Length: 84
Image (cartoon, rainbow, N blue to C red):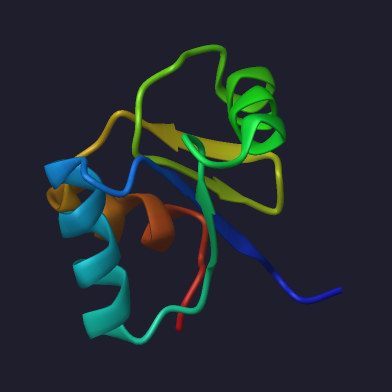
Protein backbone atom coordinates (compact mmCIF):
# COMPACT_ATOMS: atom_id res chain seq x y z
CA UNK A 1 0.00 0.00 0.00
CA UNK A 2 1.34 3.44 -0.93
CA UNK A 3 1.77 6.06 1.76
CA UNK A 4 -1.07 8.56 1.87
CA UNK A 5 -1.23 12.12 3.14
CA UNK A 6 -4.58 13.61 4.07
CA UNK A 7 -4.94 17.31 4.76
CA UNK A 8 -7.96 18.54 6.72
CA UNK A 9 -8.64 22.25 6.22
CA UNK A 10 -11.05 25.11 6.44
CA UNK A 11 -10.70 26.68 2.99
CA UNK A 12 -10.55 30.28 4.33
CA UNK A 13 -8.00 29.50 7.08
CA UNK A 14 -4.69 31.30 6.35
CA UNK A 15 -2.61 28.50 7.95
CA UNK A 16 -4.44 25.97 5.78
CA UNK A 17 -3.77 28.02 2.64
CA UNK A 18 -0.07 28.23 3.53
CA UNK A 19 0.11 24.48 4.22
CA UNK A 20 -1.48 23.69 0.85
CA UNK A 21 0.84 26.10 -0.96
CA UNK A 22 3.90 24.55 0.70
CA UNK A 23 2.84 20.97 -0.03
CA UNK A 24 2.03 21.88 -3.64
CA UNK A 25 5.33 23.73 -4.14
CA UNK A 26 7.26 20.74 -2.82
CA UNK A 27 5.40 18.33 -5.09
CA UNK A 28 3.52 16.39 -2.42
CA UNK A 29 0.28 14.67 -3.35
CA UNK A 30 -2.43 14.59 -0.72
CA UNK A 31 -6.12 14.11 -0.28
CA UNK A 32 -7.81 17.37 0.70
CA UNK A 33 -10.76 17.45 3.09
CA UNK A 34 -12.71 20.67 3.67
CA UNK A 35 -14.09 20.04 7.15
CA UNK A 36 -16.66 22.82 6.87
CA UNK A 37 -18.35 21.33 3.83
CA UNK A 38 -17.87 17.69 4.85
CA UNK A 39 -19.16 16.88 8.36
CA UNK A 40 -17.87 13.30 8.15
CA UNK A 41 -14.35 14.55 7.41
CA UNK A 42 -14.62 16.87 10.41
CA UNK A 43 -15.57 13.91 12.63
CA UNK A 44 -12.66 11.83 11.25
CA UNK A 45 -10.23 14.70 11.87
CA UNK A 46 -11.36 14.99 15.49
CA UNK A 47 -11.14 11.22 15.99
CA UNK A 48 -7.62 11.11 14.53
CA UNK A 49 -6.21 14.20 16.22
CA UNK A 50 -8.32 14.65 19.37
CA UNK A 51 -8.73 18.34 18.52
CA UNK A 52 -10.74 20.68 16.27
CA UNK A 53 -8.02 22.90 14.81
CA UNK A 54 -6.98 23.10 11.18
CA UNK A 55 -4.84 22.43 9.36
CA UNK A 56 -4.47 18.80 10.37
CA UNK A 57 -2.29 16.44 8.36
CA UNK A 58 -2.32 12.67 8.66
CA UNK A 59 0.12 10.19 7.23
CA UNK A 60 -1.44 6.77 6.65
CA UNK A 61 -4.07 7.63 9.25
CA UNK A 62 -1.55 7.03 12.03
CA UNK A 63 0.83 9.95 12.30
CA UNK A 64 -0.84 13.29 12.95
CA UNK A 65 0.39 16.86 12.73
CA UNK A 66 -2.30 19.25 13.98
CA UNK A 67 -2.64 23.02 14.24
CA UNK A 68 0.68 23.64 12.50
CA UNK A 69 2.50 26.11 10.28
CA UNK A 70 4.50 25.34 7.13
CA UNK A 71 7.76 25.42 9.10
CA UNK A 72 6.64 22.23 10.86
CA UNK A 73 5.79 20.33 7.68
CA UNK A 74 9.30 19.50 6.48
CA UNK A 75 10.51 18.06 9.82
CA UNK A 76 7.29 16.04 10.24
CA UNK A 77 7.53 14.52 6.76
CA UNK A 78 11.28 13.95 7.05
CA UNK A 79 10.90 12.25 10.45
CA UNK A 80 8.41 9.84 8.89
CA UNK A 81 10.60 9.36 5.79
CA UNK A 82 7.88 10.60 3.46
CA UNK A 83 8.97 12.20 0.20
CA UNK A 84 7.06 13.63 -2.77
